[in-house]
Length: 185
Image: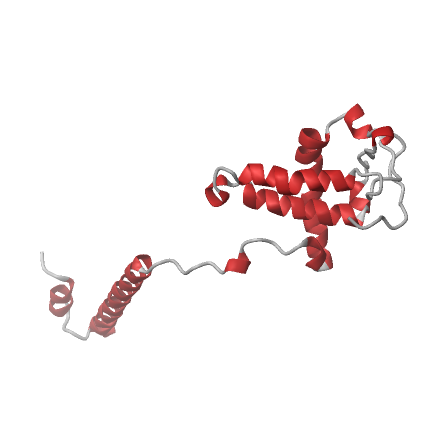
């Protein structure tokens, strides 16, 4: 068999209906494309060999909930409600009678509409941010969860359920009641 160029040249001369020129043009285009592929492969190899850019320190964690736009606040609050209701309350605040509190011993009930209390939203969001950081032992080390319990969880729950905390006027059975401004922590 002969090459395409040889067949074109012998089947009616080099200029039969411009076919030879079109084939030559296509061959040139293929060579340019081949050069582009080699150039792109070289760039990809260089990119793969380059070290990953460092992530910005402040780019990882979300901002505090009160520093968000209205739309971001709504989304973050929905995430917080899920975390509190599906994790924090069942595991740490208790269920049933545990949620009713004991006013005689100075423990307010857990408010069933806790998200209506701005102080609770702020404290619980801060608690969740600390949880995400400290309970990832790859980041915080093996003592991170203990630090979260001691330094974050216990003080937050004590404040929320204190007789002067944001839930003081609420009832676990009759529900949320707005309170006058709570005393400072």
